[in-house]
Structure formats: structure tokens, C-alpha cells
Image 1 (tube, rainbow, N blue to C red):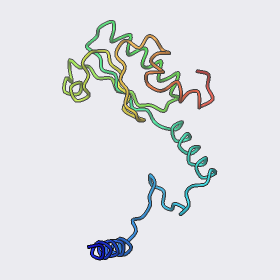
Image 2: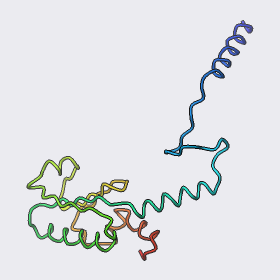
Image 3: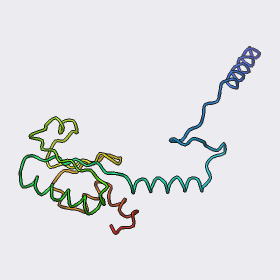
Image 4: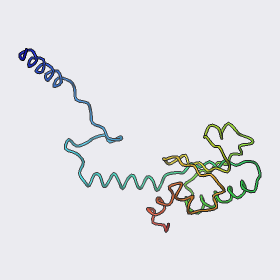
Length: 153
């Protein structure tokens, strides 16, 4: 019995050694050193990721309901937020849910006004007229991006 188990283990071990090795890939890196990444390489990757975040284009959609006072305030506040904090790196789309209810349903919007940040990830949603700028910046993850960009938070 022991002999049979040992033969099976030896055969399994040989089978495993004969399998082709799967290539190692880490998020699009073409070559990965055999013995891990050096701290310099990791630092370079981190700096590159931070630089791409600074340059990232923000896709924002503001869902409003008609020409209400809350909608008007939200539009004004959203434009001020984009102009003052995103330095032209944004696309702001304004959707009237009365005219395009399917867009609101597709984005899971349940109340208006709602600002949806689709890109860069992660997706965020803020409900209200956006009048509390500091809270909106934090909710959209823009305060941290601004701080790393060298601007005062």
C-alpha cells in the first residue's frame, strides 16, 4: 500500500513539473523580475499612478428635476465646483430627469438633484444642491486629489 502511495505521489510530482509555467503579470507590466520588485520600481509605479490621477479627466453627471430652485442651485454649484477644483479636467453633463427618465433609472438615481462622478473610479454619488462644498469635495474624493496636486484643501 505504501509503495502505491509513493508511486502516485512521485507521478503527481513529475506531472506538476512537466506543466508549463504560467507567465507572471501584474496589472499590465510587461516584465516582472523573478525575485520581486525593487523599492525604486515600486516608488516609480506609485509616482506614475499619482501623476495619472492628477491628469485624469472627471466625468460628472448632474441629474436635476425641471427648473426648480434646487436644480438651479445645484447647476450653479456644480459648475463652480468644476471650474474651481478640476482645472478644466472635467466633462459635466446635466440631465433633466423629466425629459430623460431612462438615464436616471440607468444610473440608479432616486432623488434630485444628484451629482454622479463616473470617472475616475470609484464611482460616487452626492444628493442635494451641492452647497456644502467641503462635504461635496470629500464625498467625491476630490479633496485628497487636490491636496496631492499641491493646492490647499
